[in-house]
Image (cartoon, rainbow, N blue to C red):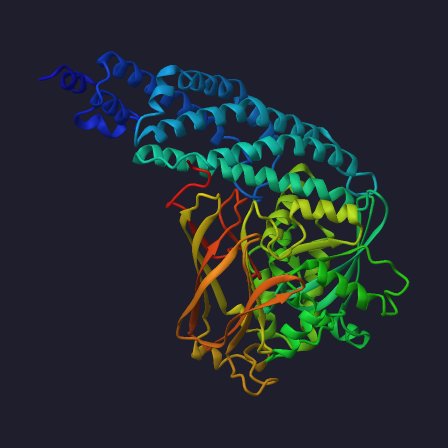
Length: 625
């Protein structure tokens, strides 16, 4: 037996029942030996690999115990979060420092240049560096900021929200969040490991870091906009535009009613909600020529652009401008400046109910954090006459929005803030301010929905407007499958996308539904139970969509065609879906050369939080050389 073979055979754990427990880097020892390195080198590398394994496993275990940082806005952040960070921080820093010191050594530098498996060593070195920088930079700063909020009085004597400590915390959170997000992005961009167990460890760390990064980003964004939103610079008046996604419009759904919210130095007052019928006499939202052509002239349902249809625009800014134009013509709005709008749907209200506690309607029905959306999007249309439907939406909206910032604690503040941010990403909630400085903050924080405009964070835009006057979109489920096919030499990426719309209504269910839900009345050519979806398809900013094909048992009434909407290229199409039918749009997407993140989807919201999006990026890694 050769010296190399003997050395291989003498390594502990290669044979027998212990093999499954050996850290995957042991495989690299075999590679070092095979290419002719001395046995002593292999033994040293093995020993160091096991030390790194122990340090990193301990560090990850310590980080996983940080309370409130493992997910998005469910439990919120509390004093326990700060205490758990402070309790583990010294040991966490010690473990990450030891691991990084080892992987910074010459042996690991040399191993990272090995053919084929050198990238695995590069990834391990990157993992140790990034976790150490988090432990010594962002996490201590985060703990300090949250500690300040823990000890602050968040409620004033009159019950309003105390905005001063929140404004101070917002600045500190930004300072902690920016480097944190940079490190998370660097972790995500590390080469995808080839060795299975390294890949598993990398994926586990990626999931945990991204969850924490999302939580902190959501909280940072919310803290940044809350003081201005709640009137730190003076009283503000907002229109609350209540959307029903059961009758889809690009930004959400048909507007059933509009309420008035006034904020002043942390205090919220909710005024009257008025039904859309009260606004109809005061005209339209001043549509552009492009909007007239796409949403009115092209039919089959001709949008009126009165209050009911203001969410037909895929940009919140246009909906807000339309709202202000109508508001200024009304007797109740003519003498009251409108500072901005909030667009909310029942999913947003359901989340607020979950945080604030159940609401009881005037007829005794109790709604909570699990059944509010379904009640407002489907059940109310089955169980109550049309004259009562807006009333129940108003009751839920008034109770849930009024309670958002009352009886506040750090936990509730972070729950509300993170929920506002995450729901804004899904278009269940959107804001627009007519004050330029305030709007700039809202846009930066992601609270103003718009068609794709960020080349670094590419998204396709998929926006739906129901053409059958009905509440059929409760039954239309949409899924998106994104598969990266190449990382191109110019820095762009190419993806294949499959976007599927399915009418889940059965014929048996259809027979029990009133026409108000099933439609097929106002437009005689459209059948009961038929979902008629006008789609707007946007390429990512600086990118393109190509090779569009369709498949399924629905009917493509209008084939995809290119046009422009308010200065942007867009593809429009119309699909008809009878009960049980579905249609898939398949196409290729190429991002901008400036893209730094995976392709995502911005779309008209459905009646639940899950957007139905899956992304497979295994073919290549952004930025990999």
